[in-house]
Amino acid sequence: MNSISKLLSLCTQHISKGFPKELGLKSCRILSEFPEYLSLMSRCNGFYGFESALHVFPLISSDEHLDALAWNDEKLWCDKYDGMIDGHFFFAEDAFGGQFSMKKDGIFTFNPETGESQKLCDTLSQWCEAILDDYDFLTGHSLMLEWQATHGRVKEGHRLVPVIPFVLGGAFSVSNLHVQESVTAMRYRGTIAVQIRDIPDGGMIKFDVNKPNPA
Image 1 (cartoon, rainbow, N blue to C red):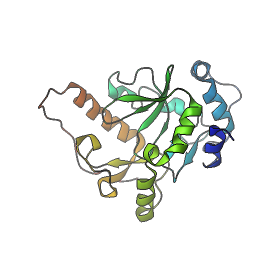
Image 2: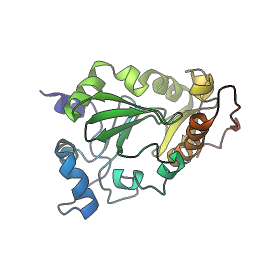
Image 3: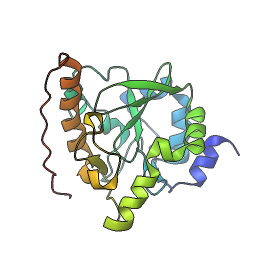
């Protein structure tokens, strides 16, 4: 069993029912660059894994689920990063909203609090293998499991977000996490990333520690 098949065997099947036979021009351009991704989506059009710590967006959704094309729309949240995400196509996220993206030269992790990306591997098959080899570190499985054991399931379209951002010293612990709607979290964290990028040494950063009401 290859790494893609093995990962799919451990995850929930098809977030969004139905995979369109005819794709729009935008999706065709994306898929021409990432044929392995099209193969994955045709087998399972979006899925969750590891107690929902890993969330892979469906390519195109025919229902209420947010799909990858919508997730990468500049006006949804990407514009808040002021050009820091150019060239990325985000296709999955971890428990905390940390993103996984595809670029022409490989698969990357993207830190939503800093806007920094780091190459993880070259291909989607290698990404699946990396997840299988170290799913706790790459998905945040343990904290997602601990959170849900106390507070219940994290709903579709939400992630665990730190009250005090990790990059500003917030702890990787359940006590520093709350549930927040994914788009709201990314837009807010984009403002943090831009401040961190532009702030001089010794400067101050402004953020609101108030918890949004979990939906």
